[in-house]
Length: 286
View (tube, rainbow, N blue to C red):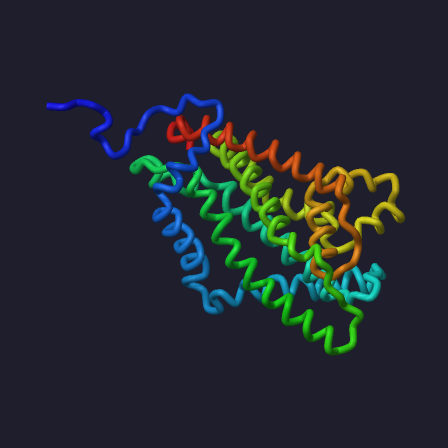
């Protein structure tokens, strides 16, 4: 009888590495990853009346609200770009980040049942959330394009630039940032349930500090004493850059994006480290 471990197809051993992101193992479980993605897309609005239409209703109504409050009442100027389109661009990109963060920040608590019974790379669960939300982002981008075409033929001064080709890279950075923060928060939620309530409040507050409904230059000009808060927020550079790519307004700060990428990588690896450490003992505390 040959007891050589090479006879086994898979060998499950304790994780002893400081960082553990086994791409080979994730690839072996790719069918499960696609199954989770399908689950996330189908089940979210399965028992709702409007179903996937909520993907469209939320950004549209939010953009209308922002246009009325911040542009019509507060008088924020968006230049040659229609205020509604300006807000829709920022909200569409912002929604992807919030969907990733909300979906991954409850990973251990929401999946405690399956985690305690079946082995698979735990990173697949939050990763599936980031991938499935790309579908939602795609739907919302189609709506943005439709309104872009509408305003263009209506006579608005709109133009594109070559930086639009880098837009997928910008979305990838935002997805990784949401994944890293989500893994970090989900690990803390297993012991401190208050974090789940803090996330909902924090996201709302963070939106106002991320230049979603105003240009970065505006906050620097009108509130120079508080402008540094936005300047140190990596999300603000992503939102500002995305508007430049989609609407050709504002600017792309190379230094700001470099800072954003650095923060994103640091948060991702920190989140991965704590996530891997938590998955070994979370079942005792969740």
